[in-house]
Image (cartoon, rainbow, N blue to C red; front, side, top):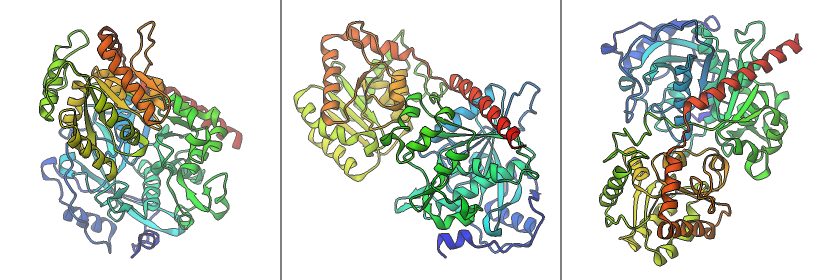
Length: 573
């Protein structure tokens, strides 16, 4: 059966009361049900099922939560109830920066006294036992054209703060190896998959009597939450005072699919308009969310401005500009428990801005580990990145060969992506074996070693909504050599040569010449002005980009969204 056919087919289950929640049988943590047992429990609770048991879930790389403990009851000091809805949340599922951002924000908000939930698909890559997940129950999600799709809901806990994560278990959509795609390409039914996630978020909150003050949704996979929130019949909705905030992490990804999706969403054809969800004959999920969310945020102030311009808006610039008064730029933060050079357990040696002896040892260990000569006198450039055009790897390809022939430097690369760029890095390492090392793939430990052991960090991105790598680099004493775009402009201060002040070296032109000139500027400083290099490094290491600060700004955004929601509700009475 084709994905669209399977997704749009009415589930052959007996008619049940709308919105009914079925509690799961409880088991002890040490005796959690297996997948086949789960299927039997769900079948019994629902009286009938034609679905076959899904394949066993694959193991994830690290556990998501500490040992199972009951979360403490909400105290009187909790200020808001907040539901974060996303396709990713580290360490359970992570493809890019969204996963880190959702995790970091959820934990920071919890530390500040808020009652937080994260709602996430239960992907095949999430190992139930490692996540210590327990089955809460099941409920029916009513999609368009009268379809009833029964989901199981599991709970795990995130971090030391024990933030509840509610996992949406619907194997037909989420029991797959990837989050959005596989090597063969994007899943053809992504619109159906994430529409179900968005509607399920509302149904789960209703069924578990958790009525958020704010639904904070992330990127196109959750962008329909604000749409469903406003479409829910007002007399029946428990969310009449609930506001929505949509964070735009990367507007280059919008969730555009064929118009055949519209009936499944439960939206009338009258709403298939260019000012709402229609986009050149297709459905655009991000566009619809942008239209209906009470407040919009991006992951940096500069990116909030850039998406209102033709290039940065990726086709939606007029719509972002139209909502300029509702658009805020809030920088992502850094998890200081994971990225702290004085205590990082992954490093061969620890160090601080006051004592850099450990950084020198990290550089030597990194050079030896990757087969380069241990040369403390040479500047070591590094790049940890997805190997895609957005990250400017093609600019590095244009600039680096001649630079390596002319200058005494070393370069280290870590990343994976498009084959042509992987092959380029392999060639570069063969051509300059004493100057270049390339590790194709990703290693959390090696990435920490590279940030700690390198002297300069390359970020030639064509666009960078926020960027975390430059924040990690500065924290670990690696000076960014980066293109001034998006969040990089908001976080890296270009060197003032006269005042010898700054935290990095910026360039503006997205060309190989721009990359080469910036690298030569760094090399000149290394040779001629070690004291300036030391000053740049020290100033960068002392910069603080914490989730605590970021969470405070989101608190203000939530308050504003609630005021707007209340005003809109008042005007409609």
